[in-house]
Length: 290
Image 1: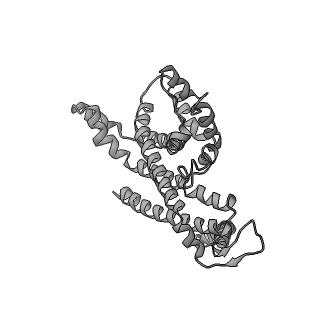
Image 2: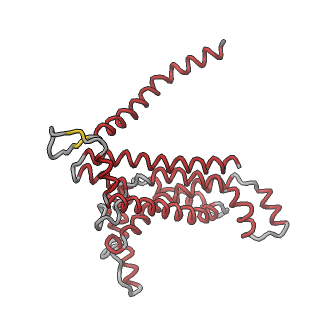
Image 3: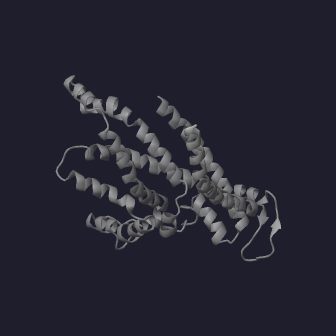
């Protein structure tokens, strides 16, 4: 009886918070669905008309959608590859007992706490500027032609900026996992004559399988909605070279003032994100069960 009363009391106390969260989620979603069925232009307020699924057809057949989808997939895949391939050896280095290890760990993790807008401005004006940037200065010292990153390789520049922001997160998760590894297994492998490479492949890497899948899931969810870095550095250009789905929806709503089309794009983005999350959760679930 006491347990039942405790459960009832707990549910009663949680109900306001859950109801508020539900309203917080369902109201914007309902309004987005409503606006997606209208021809609604901010340049001509008061002339809204019902168009059904016409906005979805227009958005999905727009060549900009396929380009933005491709850029989104390239951005997500590239950042995941960079953060995992660099974060793993970086975590291994930070796990070694060296002088000043705590300070080094703090310096590595620090970029994750910098706001994306600030980080993008630093990269744009201090590092990748074709005249006064650090990379241009280094190229000049090597008697090379400085690269105009945001004109010649804009998508690659955005990938570097976003990867730099997420690398500390991946490194921190992997480092935490390394610290929980059984040292007796590593000592036994060393006594048996196993090389450092064999120890990494057969002991460390399987131990990192679960944290790597967690990193992939969390990063993918956030990378699908990258916006600030693109807005600050390239503005989606040149042309559509750095326009992802999130920036395309923004341009439809606040540059072309087409709320109906942008709302349809937002719902398409939600569907794509849920499809990606569904398969990732299934893959990660199998990995965790194993």
